[in-house]
Image (cartoon, rainbow, N blue to C red; front, side, top):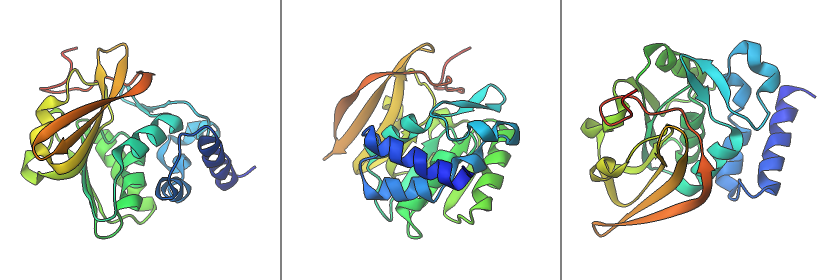
Length: 216
């Protein structure tokens, strides 16, 4: 089975399991093959539903987790999105497909080598609406705020400080907890009021680094 077929098989599995629910997320996964975002020596594992190391103590999240977070974010065409934790760029590329040419994804990565890796990977697909920025993403990206959607792809002690960078009618998705386990929180902003929703289950992400991250 070639890599393209493996990608299709993975998407079918994620649909059957209920992780992928919407057509926009399905199309984004199909057009953003995960094998382009993993180190070459791990290509044979690219379509396993598991996280994989990408160097520097970081990982590319497992596909089911990426699907869950993408669905919870409910991104729309034309949205401006902030992602905190670029990793190898897969999540940002998927979101770029969903928001389309009129949308924009800003993704922030604290590790310079990974920021470069993400840029290279996104470039392979000819995606033009992603900007990878190397800086402390734990504080968000106030100079580009406000955002329609914010997604945090690393374990964080809190995401409350990011809400001021979120537009009204916006959504923020983040794994919140300690360094060992997190719960997935969805924040909805309506008329200046914040509503918090908790997705069932526990998750394990690499810890967020930086001023508002964990002091490791």
